[in-house]
Length: 74
Image (cartoon, rainbow, N blue to C red):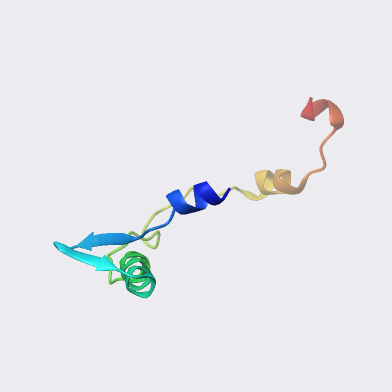
């Protein structure tokens, strides 16, 4: 287990052609890398406001809450 721990360790990183060394420096670079990927940006996302969906009429609407029989599930 200790040998795997050593092989998973990040000793140095190269960022923008600069070598980053040391636990705190590597931790900071990795943190800021992922922080930039998970920040909410001003993205233009599609919405459903102007879409027309089909709706169920009164008779069919009741089928959504109708009890079912065990034979129907098999």
